Image (tube, rainbow, N blue to C red; front, side, top):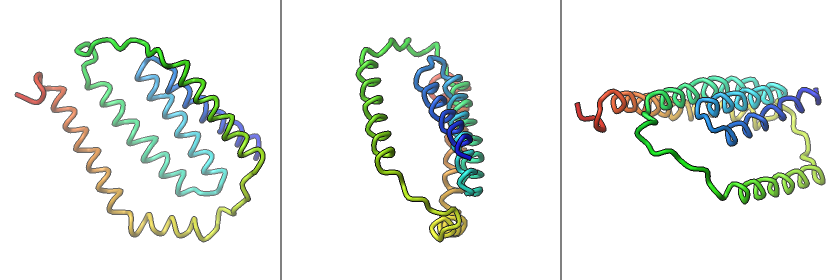
Length: 162
C-alpha cells in the first residue's frame, strides 16, 4: 500500500509541476487533471470513497471542463504575448525552501494515524449531503452562468455587444 501512495504522491507532484512549468495552457489543464485524479487515488487509499468521487466529479470533471471551455473561447491573439517573468528563480528557491521545511516537519514529526471510519469522516459526509448540498448546487449554477457568459462574450465581438 505504501508503494501505491508513493506513486500517487509523485504523480500529484509531477502534475503540479507540469501545471506550473508548461507554457501551453491546454497542457497545463491536462496536468491539473492528472494531479486531481492522483489526489482522488490518495483518497481511495484512505478509504474515503465519497471524497474521491467528489474530487473526480467536481474537480476532475466540472472544473477542468470549465477551464478548457474558457481556454477555447478566449481569443489569445488579441492579447499581447506575455514575456517570461524574471522572478522565476526566486520563486523556485522559495518553493524548494518550503518543500524542505514541510518535508522536514513531516519527517521529524509524522502525523498520528486516524482511521478512515472515524466519526469526523462520517460527520463530514453527512454534513456535505445535508447542510452543504444546496451551496454545492449554487456553486455549480454559478459555474454554469460563468460558462454561458464566456460563450456570449466570445461569440460577440466587442465585449457582449451584438
